[in-house]
Image 1: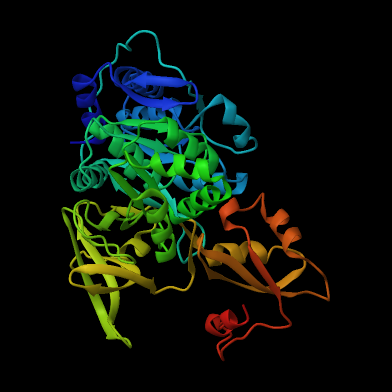
Image 2 (image 1 turned 90 degrees about the vertical axis):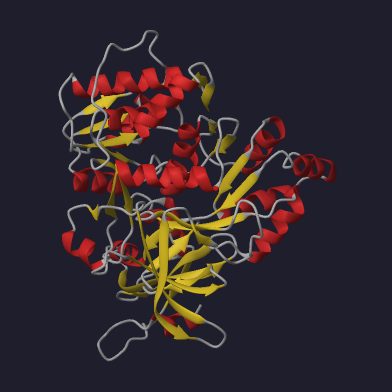
Length: 492
């Protein structure tokens, strides 16, 4: 059953239930569905839109949900845009996806100034007063549903295509494993161009008939106060969020600390993912909240694959066992000092269809027997898996994002003062990794970190900006002229 079909069932079962809340108010499932119908009718004008791409640029809330759902109902493949990305990154996604329409909220239309596209359609943030007289054919499971852009070793972000079948499988496996019900409620503050925010939090909540409250952005103080005053049962975040929540908790007085900690007791589940969770963060959060975070593992290409159990022992530093419907195996295993390490390969209904317009890369990503090669190195103990690294050193995992070092290097080399550069990730307890660069300057020119960061801001998303800069006379290279990142890392 496709996601739009499943949500139509939720509307029948809970038509008057408040299912979504944003900064403007709360909405019933019927109001959300009517708004999505309106969007679909506006897109289609009663004509098929099957196979087309629609980009969505909307803030968290009704406009985003109705845009996403209505676009899918029209038969299109939805391509969410990040409202915090600079023009250059928005333009790349819009052009690469060959989007026919951009659904855009009026408050965000200025972000598209100067970007050429086929057509822009404004979406409102209030439901229509009357039902929309509109009939459509639900998309088929094999139809393309969602395309998310992720960084690859080739540099520029590439589109990861999911069908309605793979999307539905991702949702159903998590609803089953984490026992979502219509009694649940979740606070949403994660990005909405990323699997964690779209599928794990938003789509799972809507599919289960649960309540989702969407904040404009993450703010530790606001989230703590929401937890104190709200009635939530699930909490999902990246390790960076937990680190910031801990820091804010530590900054308040003893009375407030007690209030914050006690407010965590009603939660039935707290999840961490999208990056490695430091054991120190897990232990500190347990002390503060009384909860042992459930760690899980997934990718844009695969959805969630592994998870610690909802019921049962959760092992710190491990991401658990395969979720329902997923198969995993470890290949090219080699013995290290105290374990066996190999590449993780996965197979199941969750897996993506293809990289958009990249047939060669798609083919290289799968084995002949259709296992997807994740590129992540793992070790396994009693069926539980631990992520220990990446085959490629060109990917940096920071704050829950996968970032291509090659993409950042390509931008840095456009700077008039930089002659050579190398970008790599450095370990960091809050973000997992932070982005560092070693550069060789031209003609005795001078530049500092703040100048570089300011110069990069209109070229790359904020989470791709440098945190550390080292200026070198030369970079360590092998005989083939390739920078030796292992040697360079020692300089940091």
